[in-house]
Amino acid sequence: MATTNKLILEPGLTAKNYWRDLYHYRELFMILAWRDVVVRYKQTTAGAAWALIQPLMSIVIMTLIFGKLAGLPSENGTAYIIIVTTAMLPWLFFSNALTLASQSVVNNANLISKIYFPRMIVPASSIIVSLVDFLVACSILAGLMLWYQLWPTWRLLALPALVVLAIAAALGPGLILTALTVRFRDFRMIIPFIVQFGMYVCPVPYSSSYLHHKLITKCGEALGGKLFLLYSMNPMVGVIDGFRWAIYGGSETFYWPEFFLSIVLTAGLLFIGTVYFRKTERAFADII
Image (tube, rainbow, N blue to C red; front, side, top):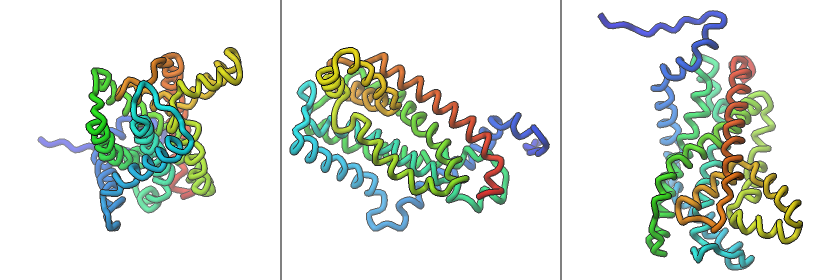
């Protein structure tokens, strides 16, 4: 005899079975993710080609400004455009995922106010859109590696784990900003400034080893080391350094303590984001 799943709503039960409900609503997660992917480029002339155009333009502009005009150095003899690309792709994924996730619940207000489902599905599914864009944009990096005859090594096997780390780095703050945006709509105006500023405190146009050398030179060993440790508390520093290490070897000195610090902080932000989102989501339908 066929059995059916029953959803029973009573005080305390939804909180107790929240994670089980996330699994039961996995089809809704896939439907929302697919819808967002289709809608993102459906009404544009270039369509899905924007997933290549946007990162390519960003890479070219940053290479010209920081590589040619500012004269920032390369590392290990690797072409400067490769250095920028290996950082720009995960950064664009993070910034797009953070932006889309923060606005996802507000953009789905009609759905949120009508039916019950674990609200975390909405920001989580929006990140899939950025992940698809990232995977498409990786073809730019593949083409540049072929052009410069830069062949991957065994380190490339670590790339899937680094992608998971990038997803976690985006999801934690994304859940916090999503909940804050529902309560305070002003955050929709603030987030673009946060994203724009964030790129310049990440090792996108420069390498971490270059910054470490500059800090030690100008501030001394003790203060420079403390400042670099503070800089490494940005979770995306570990993600970008990891991408460079996996794709072309990165700098001669890979700062493993700082990388593990980024992992710990990413896990901490993901935990805080999950707890805060769970605490506030029950009121979404009333205030959205």
